[in-house]
Length: 450
Image (cartoon, rainbow, N blue to C red):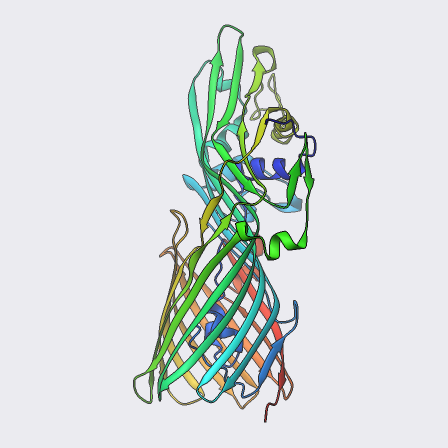
C-alpha cells in the first residue's frame, strides 16, 4: 500500500540530513579504562573488578552520560563566524568522501558489588548510534545548483546512512581465577526502538529532452522500523510493552575480557565488546523515492554566482527539495524485518607500574563500522593521590591521521564518587574545528556492605 506523507518532519530530516551531514556511531567509552577505581571502567572490560570496596549504585542519568563524535569533517567546514555558512567552504575542505560516526548514551541504572573473588554488576542504558558516508560530488551539486547538469545523464554521487536506537540491559560477572588473573563476561539483552537503513543509494540525474525537464532522484530502497503507524500519514504509536518485551525487536550481545598481571610491575588486558546483533521486525516500512524531482528548462537555477541570471540561494534550493519529499516518497509495509550488527570493538592494553600509585602504558582500540573502522592507539599515564583522587592523561592517534590529548579524573569520598573523562580535551577548547569530540561523566553512591 503506497501513501502520501503529510507529517513529514521525521522523513525530511533523515533524507536531507543524510546527504550532507550523515549524522549520529561510536560506542566507545574507553577513556574510563584509565580509571580502574571507577566501577564503570568494567564497561570497557568486564574483567575489571570493583576496587571501591563498596556497593556502587548509579541512579538514572547521574550514573553516567556519554556522547561521542568521530568524523573526517569539522563543524566549521560549513559554518564560520556568526553561523554564516558556505557550501564552497564545505566542499573545498571535504575529502573525497564525507564520513561520520557518533553516539549518545544515557545510563538509567548501574550497580556494582565485589564479593570475595567475584564482582557482579547490572547496567541499564539508553543508546543511540549511527554511521554514514556520502560522496563530495553531492555537496558540489548543492553548492553550484543544477544548471550545468541539464542535458546530462549521470550519477552525482552515492551515500549511505544508518541509525539505531535501543535500550540495553546487561549483567556482568568478573572472577579472580588466581592471583593476578581475572576474567569477565557481560551478556546483554537489547530492546530495539528505532532503526533506519538507507543501504547504498545513488543520487541520479537524467534529462528528459522530449519534455525539456531535468529529473533528479535518489535511487534506492530505505528500511525503517519505529514507534510509528501510518494511514496516509505517519503518526506516533508508542506502547511501552512493544519496546520492552517486543519479541520482534530483540537482540543479544556479549562482552568478554581478561586482565593478567604477569609480575609485580606488568599488567595486560584484552576485551571484545558488543559481539552481537539487534533485530527489527515490529512496525517496519520499506520506502522508495517513487517519483523524481522535476525541473522544467525554464526553472533550472544556479547557486554559485549571485549577480548572474537564474541565481537561487543554496538554502532556498534545498528548502524546495525538502518541501516536495512528501509528494515523491512511497511507503509500504515491509515484508520482512532486518538484522543490524552492532559495531564490535577490540581493546588491548599493557601497563607498567612504577609503584602502586603510578603507572604508564599503551593501549589500542579498534572499532568495526561498515567500511569505516576506527583505530585509536594511545599512550597514557596514571596517578593515584591518596585514597580519594585518581587521574590519567593520554595522547591518542586516530586512524594514523590525527593526534589528540585526553584527560580523566575521579574523586571518591566516603559515600559518593564523581568521574569525568574525555579522549580529546581540545575538542572542548575549539569544538567547532574538532573532528573528534567525546565526553563521559557521572557519579556513584557508595554503600558499605560490612
